Length: 127
Image 1 (cartoon, one colour):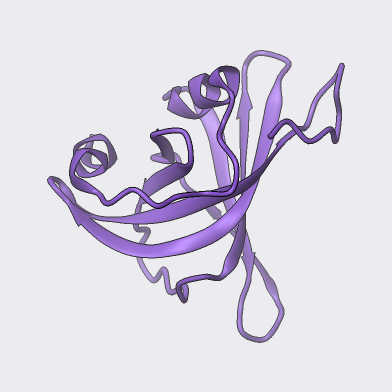
Image 2 (cartoon, one colour):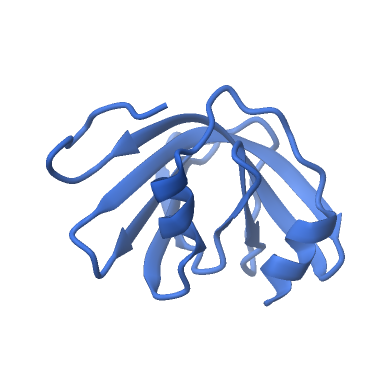
């Protein structure tokens, strides 16, 4: 709920790609597994479950900041969503930093690429 409220007041960034409507719908679901991946300063990959990950317009995703989450702005990130449908998507982009919305702080992901991660277009770029 905090992510939804914060998304209302968060600043939108212009991404390089827009999420197609089916991708936005999957990221909007509450019953979905959503993960955020990035490499830390040592080059070690990190994966965080971010169930609160939601679309903000067509070119951004927002999420509630998990405890002990430290990430520099402009860090390359990847977000994946898996639902009960046999469909999964991956979004690549950059961390736009922490923004303050109505419900508190949220992290913003600026979308640069959208991929299908399931048949009939596994690995195909969508936007």
